[in-house]
Image (cartoon, rainbow, N blue to C red):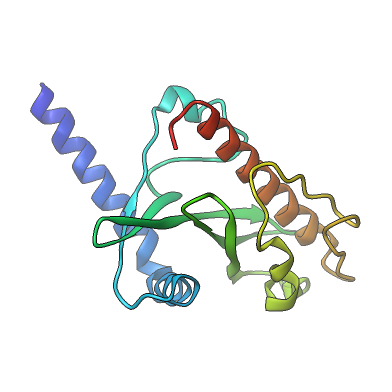
Length: 175
């Protein structure tokens, strides 16, 4: 029985990592290399007890949150998810350093005709340096974009939920 659970967990983690990187492997690899200044690294799913993740504002599972290591040294974390836009969703990536400070955010895929400006480096830079104690507020410390109101609010809410979730995981000493 125990062996079956281990095999299922191993298969699930492998499948999740494969699923994650099928479409975005090149983009994620490029962003990690640039953000951390490394050419080689390992990225592995960071899995938390389901009883804990069910209570979090953001989604955490084997295909959303990852540790980034180089030669067993923790460089940071990667979080990948999606958020709603006007009629569809967009995929995004948030990279954290080892202290859970945002190093980089990136919109990986935007599927709408309007609002794609949220993918601009200039707009996304405002998330850099934010920590689990920060609260992001649309039109206060997060700049609005004309024609992208829904996506801006959605990205702001998603990052807020992620930061709050990480704060909870830290308080429970799971990170």
